[in-house]
Amino acid sequence: MGRAVTRPGLRPLLPWVGLGVLVLAQICYPLTVGATRAGLTVATVVLGYLLSVGHALLTRGPRAAATLVAVATGGGFAIEALGVATGFPFGSYDYSGQLGPKLAGVPLVIPLAWTWMAWPAWLTAARLVSPGVARVALAAVGLAAWDLFLDPQMVAEGYWVWRDATPALPGLPGVPVSNYLGWLLFAVLLMAALRPLAGAVVDRAGPGDAPMFALYLWTYASSILAHAVFLGLPASAVWGAAGMAVAAVPLALALGRDRRPGQPGQRPRQDRQPQQGPPADATA
Image 1 (cartoon, rainbow, N blue to C red):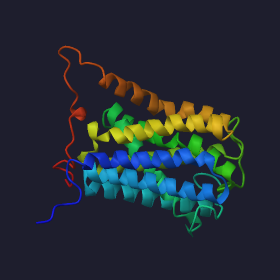
Image 2 (cartoon, rainbow, N blue to C red):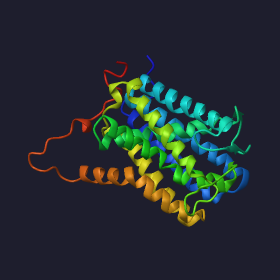
Image 3 (tube, one colour):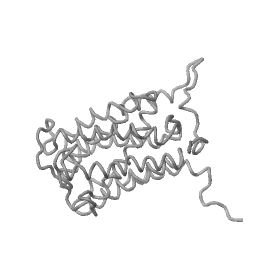
Image 4 (spheres, one colour):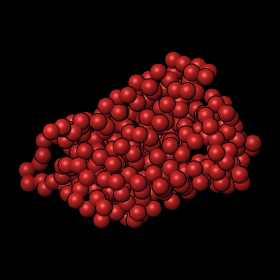
């Protein structure tokens, strides 16, 4: 009788392996130029996408993973196609041909980037605040603030260009403020839809989400370092550091507290209970 290739005991390691491959790809980014760098950019986004969707599937089940793909990937493509066609909500911009095939003027890799960071941003908010408006708000800010790093970097590489980049944030010419507001608007819509469609299985964060917390904190710290030192973008290093700190710093502090010995009489939080694969209500 044959055995399954993936043993249950190995499944929790898969996101860590994926994260390791992603980190290696990102470390290589400043060492490349031209078409090689563009290809590595696409590969990095695909790796991040597979990591986040795969983690959602392994820890929350098919419904959560399908919801993530529907609202982040599908919604991301729809909002990008609307933006390219009309200029709303980001402003008027055009993509170059360096990021691969396009549909409706949008490189197919772009919606994958929304998905890549939407999932760790949601889990970070789930770890830090109770369900409700505050959680949606923190998750949305946690996702949208990433663009304070992303857009200046991608514009500097020539992957897209804004027709009118005014007004812009101080030190970040080439990217209009409307872009960041558009990101925040869509991030709110995305996060507000995720919980009702995915179900209660995405309400809690637990030890099985450690790879996603590491991904969020790595993205934060490595982006600051890369922009400040390797990419020659000190202003975006400062803006991104300030924006993502809203979620990243409380997350780091919370994870640090978890590593300390428990206080006498302290009751464990429900959302920190161990996860053993998709919960029983994963399809509820």
